Length: 127
Image 1 (cartoon, rainbow, N blue to C red):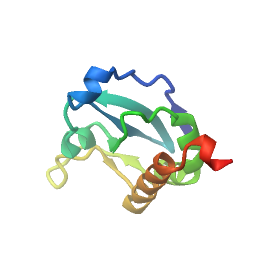
Image 2 (spheres, rainbow, N blue to C red; image 1 turned 90 degrees about the horizontal axis):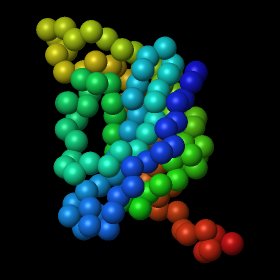
Image 3 (cartoon, one colour; image 1 turned 90 degrees about the vertical axis):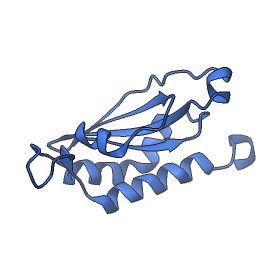
């Protein structure tokens, strides 16, 4: 099982943040128990159907969110479960939009872990 973590998030300027740019926590399900995890900056919200065609699940996070490694460490078990149960597939007449099947409960748990991570108190208050 491999989680590939891309730790170079695109910086958002103050102007971009004020004009509606946002960050998304993304998991690209590669199949065979592998996933690529990354943050991206987007000007407009991503569309679920479009991203599912690429095998990418995403969740909006705060524009200040930057600690991808810490978040992945906190959610590692559920991320690994998500990757382990995901399967790439060829679109068919029964399923034209999703290039991947995945455990929706595992994805919900990943989202909950990400939400909990970004809502934790600042380091100074945790001591």
